Image (cartoon, rainbow, N blue to C red; front, top):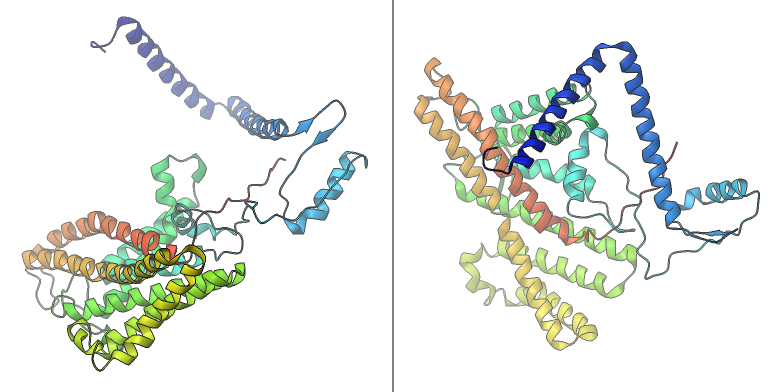
Length: 438
């Protein structure tokens, strides 16, 4: 206050006085039944004014002269006859209505089918990347499944996962008691995350069982083995003692997710009916799955010399041939150099995205190591938690849930936004926002 000019200081004092006055008025409104009734009427009037404002904005976009109004509007096909009948009724039949299908160059808006109320968080995270275009797979339902899986692998712990789920249930309860639209941004986003926390907590509990984690590798539960496919084990090992198995498991999950993304890309291209992108997507899928098969068959990168010896016919058929097709198809439309450049880009991107999923193993090991440190400090042995160890375990759990939980959330989001969703999702759509007025 002392460092700013006197006139501005007086203005700030007036603003503070007004804020105090407004706060006192708000209190009196809640106490007085008459003022409460007036307040509700004013709020209703405010909504009406907002609707009128929207109507005026639309009207300003219409072409008009003394006796005629011209406008264009997007209408969902199932409502076309209803809208046409409404126009005829309002104009007493003095109208001309022309129905036109979208032209190829038109940016057609997408009618979004929203997720259930308690899964809104997944929708907001997905649409932060962009909206789908028509005839494109809506990735929200996929994200509802894949996001908790990836989060659970990195945050695998039965005890901490249970806490996350309980917090999610409590948020669901409080969300039903308040008007979420009138909450501040932080509180609103926290309440929106109720379903996300519940599913992520359940996933963390499941993978905690597989890896034997209960507030860290405390020995309360032992790793549960579901099964194995060759060198890939679904649980049944301690993350700290067998990190190589965890690394293989992370790569397997990454390849499965990338293959799923490429399958959805093929489906999108088939629905849009372009031949060239469909063929490129099929070859990309062929390349990724073929390269992964060779990696398993010949025992990993350490035996890469055998790929070019005994495995040369397989290498040509599973890696070189699909890459060559991608190069030729791209070169026929964009040029030879562009074809070579794109095929090399496909090879690098496939390898890069696959390696990126190794962060699942890295963050899972970090999470286990952090919990293990607090177990050692607390003196927890063979599943026995002594009374003096409880406060230390609580501190470790709070740190894991707050700091590490946030880090793992960000990395899970990154895997979706950079690795998984771009495989099939353009995010260049325009959401259809109909004019609504009571």
